[in-house]
View 1: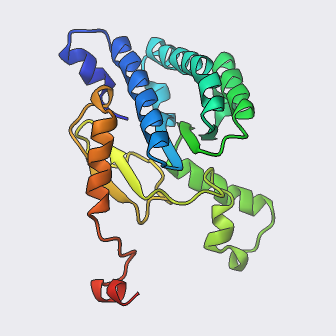
View 2: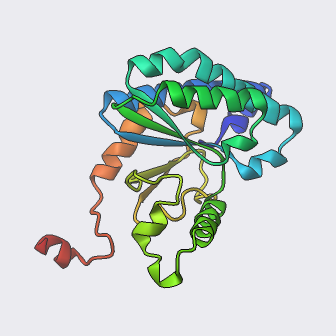
Length: 225
C-alpha cells in the first residue's frame, strides 16, 4: 500500500492526512474483497524497516492502527472477517499490541474473509525465523521439506497469494512475502494507495483473470492438463 505521503504532498497536506486517507482506502478494499468472495487478503501495513521513519510519524501510524481496529471490530465480527497477523506483534507499542491481540481473539470465528496484516513484518526475517524454529526443534536437514518449512511461516495453513498488487508506481516487492510469492501474479499500478478503491481492485482482478498461470510449465503442458 504505497503512496500515502506523495498523495498528501500533491495536495499540500501533512503526511498524516495521507496516512488517514490510506486507512480509509484499506477499509474500502477490505469491504470490496469480502463482497467479491475473496477469501484471503493481506495488507502490508508496517515493515520492520518502517521503524526508521520519524518517531512522530511512526507513532501516528500505530495510533491509526489502534483507532481502525477499535472502530471496525464490531463490523469485522458481524461480517465474518478474521484478523490474523504476519510479523512480530509483540514488539509493537503497548496500546497497539493490546488492540491487535484483542481483535485477533474477537474475530477468531470469522469464516468469510481472513484479513492478514503484515505488521512489523520482514520477508527475509520470516524465512530466517522459520529456519531457526526448525533448528530449535531439532529437525534434521534431510527432514526439512517444503511442506514442513511452510508450517513455520506466518502464513501456515493459508494458500500462497494468487495476486500481489503494488500501488504508487513502484516496481518491486520490497521484502514482501518472498517465499509465498514464488508463483504469484504481480500487478503494478501508478495509483497512489489513498486513491485505490473497488474500481481499481476490479481492474487488477480483470488483469489477473486474463493471465495464463503456468507454474513453471510450458503452454503445451498446461493445455495437456
